[in-house]
Length: 232
Picture 1 (spheres, rainbow, N blue to C red):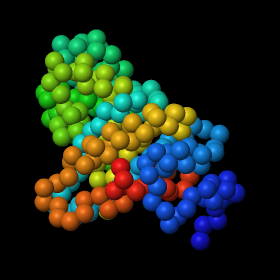
Picture 2 (cartoon, rainbow, N blue to C red):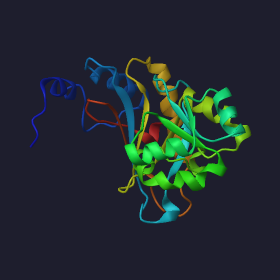
Picture 3 (cartoon, rainbow, N blue to C red):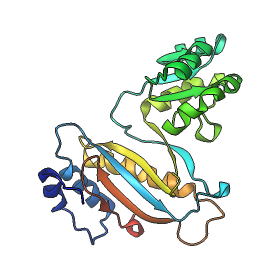
């Protein structure tokens, strides 16, 4: 059994492991358990009643957080020619095509936080899907990260403002950041409510029974706090 540190054990004493907390109370408690020297991220973890082996039960989408994530988002856009100039004018941090793709493929370069691509580039971007995909960086139409050139300004602005992509993992779980522990409780509450609504909207029609089985709120280094989802 792993030995827990004194800081974690002290935070654990604040949490009733048998209680399902109302959302506002859970957020206040998560902030109290974020006691490290760095600004921890408050996260929501969902246990879904889906079978991730079935393609029609995948949960994947994006949510625009009202108050962002409290960090600077470096946006890469795969484009060339006029499309590249449009991306630069819209505020993209990095814009490129074959040279960037080759650098990612050969050097493993990943100094960006989000990636967009215009449709004309997707045939080439597909060569690095195995690099970008596992890291959640691969442009995908379902996630709204493959966009028409005219739509680049909106997509770039949303990513910088706090648009977050979520998708279930192989065990049917979702892991979504809510914001920083330094955020006030109201900002975290509004971000969390936006996430809950977005996840609920993505319920696959083929799922029978309970869709959201459990939600846990936690700071990066803190204990899990179970949410009373029925009261949200």
